[in-house]
Image 1 (tube, rainbow, N blue to C red):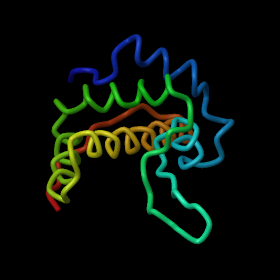
Image 2 (cartoon, rainbow, N blue to C red):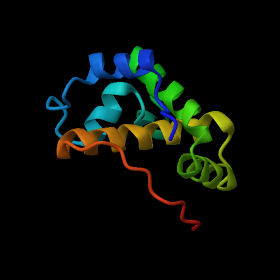
Image 3 (cartoon, rainbow, N blue to C red):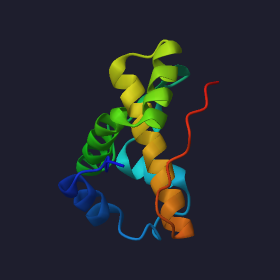
Length: 123
């Protein structure tokens, strides 16, 4: 099976995340990478959630490139297609996939296992 994270992208993620012990939850890692949605508000006006402009730009870019490269993986492609079917644009769907990959990375670091591909399930 082909690797979906390149050497340079993987090195960047490893440099920025380390062993993951500084992040208590996957949400903290996503927020650090700028992959968690941010609520825009001013006074009593709340304008909904949008992609965050904060976070570690290099790590966000690494996860984004990782997600783009993973479109060749059937499981990742099925998730991307599901997001497209929900009405998201290409960039939004890639951002969702990048967040999912950050969540998977956090779980792998917490448990200490390697990635194992699962069969595609259509929902």
